[in-house]
Structures are given as structure tokens and as C-alpha cells.
Length: 319
Image (cartoon, rainbow, N blue to C red; front, side, top):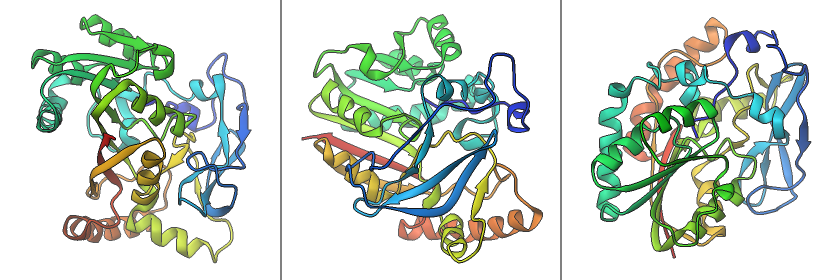
């Protein structure tokens, strides 16, 4: 889905016409993965338009999520076309999404990974954005379809002649066992119901079909893990003054648990760490220095021991 966050003027507090001052929200008292009700507060929260969105953790399965979440039209309004220029992938990409050549090699490598799992068959990308991956897949002989929420992104994909449906996956109405492989790239952390989405993915996959998932596990990194431990003993906690677009914060453990609840067998799980770069969000010079030093240590540790990554690849099979 590569959802959009608000443009810079919104993060500074300005409101474009038609956007309400406050967001409609819901409060979650149970885990979105296992349904557990034993939750513990974590010392991290988003603050946006005068509202707080605190992070909690399920004591049963370990899923971390915002206990207060924007919902409905308010959630949709967080995502604008400017995201594809600057904020997708948590603002860590150095190029606009619309630069096709910048993602050609990455998409080719992805498709080669898919082809090691299944022959070039029926592919569905959930959250296909403007369609560059689908375009290359079609050129390689895949029967490729996409689903995407952003009207701007769908318009771009349709202009390329791609088969893309606008809306949620459940709204697309695909028959059971429609696909050999489903790809979720930077999607699952944004959706209102992470359990419902992976259950629908399982439904539209054929028996023995594969789910290929990539995305952030931001709170799992060494810097964020140390900060969460430290701020448990300090007042205030970690405050992110930006749109609360990560509704779910996965770790390897909680992501595996979620997939197993809907019948997936996890075949491969690989962590990676984004190298030190421009920090995302508002940080003091001291915080930037500390995060840069910790990230520099984090990169080789993740490569060597598969620990403390901030991104993950999961390959799972429908049992």
C-alpha cells in the first residue's frame, strides 16, 4: 500500500481545506492479532493535531499497536499524494516513488525471488502503489493484478495499462484460490485490521500458494529497543510528532504469530537494518548523534546474527 503520511505543512499544524482539526478515533482494548486483553503500556506515543496515540504491547503474542487509532475518513485523510514524493518507507527513501528507473533493479530482484518459489503464474500485489512492480511482472510473463487505496496511485497504474482495483482487498471480491503468490510490501502496518487482511490473503491464495511480505519492524531496532527500555524509567516517554500511520508495530515474534493464526506456515524470515542516514521526524542534535552511532553498530550485528533489524522479509506458505 505504501500509504501516504501528511505533507510537511500538516505536520507543522496547518490544515488544508476540508480537513477537520481533530481525527475520528477508536480505542482498542484487545489485541488485533490474538484477541488477548492483557496489554501493557509502552513509553512511546504519537502526538498529532493535539491528540495522543499511545503504543501498547500484547502480553500474550507480543504485538505492539496504537491503542488509540484514527479510523474511517480520518485515517484516509492522513494519506496524500505527497507521500510518494518524500514519506513512503518512513521517509528513508532517497528518491520519489515515481522515478521508475530508481526501483527497476529492486523490483527485478523481487520478481526473481518470487520465481524461485513458484513459476510465473497468478500474482497479486496488495498495496501496489503506482504499479512499477506489476508492470515489470507483466513484462516477465506473470498474470499480475493489484489492489491499492490511493486514488492518485491507482490513476498512475491504470495509465500504464495495469489491472488494478481501488479499495481494500476484501472489497475486490476475488474468488477463493485466485492466486499463486500474494505480495505485501510496506502494507500491513497501515491497515485498520491486520488480522482480517492476512486472513483474506489466505483465502485468495491457492492451497500451497505463497505470501511474500516485506515491511518495517521499527520498534525492534537496537536504538528503539534501548530507548523503550530507558524511557520506562523516565517521565514523558518517546514522542513522535507526526501522523500516526503505523497502527501496528511488528516484531519477528508477533508477525509469525499473526500469520500462524490464519493457517500460514512460515518458511523464511530475514531481518535487515537500514544504514545510518537522515533521521525521520523531529529529533535533537544529541538524539541524531546517538541514533547514528547506534545504527552504525546495529547494521553489522543484524547482518551477522539476525537480531535488532528494522525491516523484515517473511515468506510463508498456505498450509
